[in-house]
Image 1 (cartoon, one colour):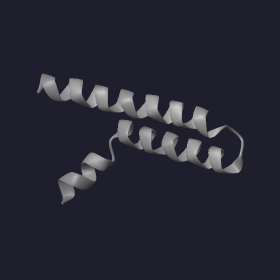
Image 2: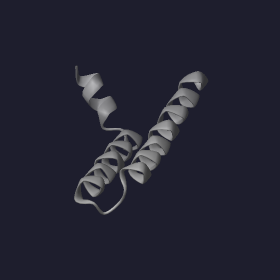
Image 3: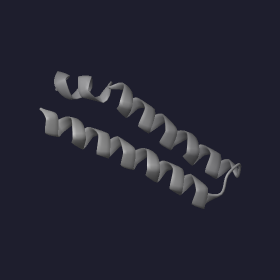
Amino acid sequence: MKEKLTELLEVRKIIALVITILFFILCIMGEISPDKAFEIVLMVIAFYFAKSTALDKKK
């Protein structure tokens, strides 16, 4: 259990989560269009998973 909590505190995961929440809030407030928010969040998540997969292959 402690290992899983430690894994959640990685910087990349925190950044991906914060950016996703930020653009979700901006979309709800009407500051940006839902299409743009979706594209940006999709890019962040795709980068995160691509980076995680590349790092896993090295191990």
